Length: 449
Ligand SMILES: [Mn+2]
Image (tube, rainbow, N blue to C red):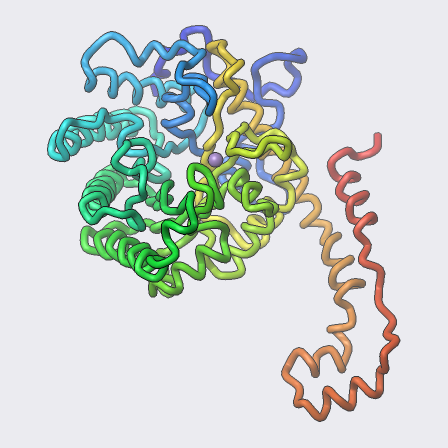
């Protein structure tokens, strides 16, 4: 397979070379072929990474305080809009191929230019997706998921599905229909419905319309799912919680709120309706990523994950690259225990200060190594069943007694009352072991030498 090499001429294929001298741009932990102890699976299988078009190729260093980027993105120059669109695709695939990343994700207008009419936009999407199909064929890189940008254009400033305008509702839905077709054409694994501006800034502006607005949310979601079925799209339709930004409050705030909305919409029972979760979005809701993943798994609705990292000191969605191992260990424990059929999608961007051609590669290499370390640590913890010893052997041991089993199997009110009298108000409890567990995790992260 020929290595694409035009847009990042100073970077070659990134090798796995743990012995390389410090500061080298190499993988030290992500060896895709390595079978992870106790799992029977390779790191590549356990970490199904995907790169993204929006931050990965379109990101130029803008932040919420700047209208001007700081980085040169040469593929944005030198031709008409279609030529530039194709160059964006080429640059994305070159970057992914050099990193050994097997999948990508995109919004409709990340890569294809938006036209002056819907028809023109659709033609552009046809042309660009033909080019993507060729790149997929040439590199073996596949589409993780497609989605629509329903937050950038001014027409979407007051929402789409839950917005004020039936014309905008129709336009946005027609864009989704087209992007579903394109995603199917590119053999995309899944489709994401995030929404972006489905929320509010001013509570008084919606008080009298709340019921109507939430009904439109459900109707829009049903239309997306029905259309996917009608064209034979076999992937999941994944709804994505995010509590705020760009709106002050978004309706799909967190996993449990989104599950409730999907339930109200009559969509929760559909097998291919899932959730797409993101580390930084969990943080904006004041929740741990692992908690959100756990709740989605509990509901049988985990679809895919956006792999990035928020900053607890910054109040907005910073989309930093994953680099803190400890945040990912409990997530990987869940994925190893319950299985995972989605992708780890790098919805992460360079800082505005990072301007070197190599920086996107540092971003991805660091994130991939971080997930690889977390995977190996989680597999070791799981293999040792060390958490089971604490939870089953100590914390929840009472539920293994005859009385525990009797309660868990269902117990009538008379037996409950009799038991409460018998055991009385002073009941022996085990320690919660929090400090012990913290120390134990450190033992796995940093084994004593
Ligand atoms: Mn984000």
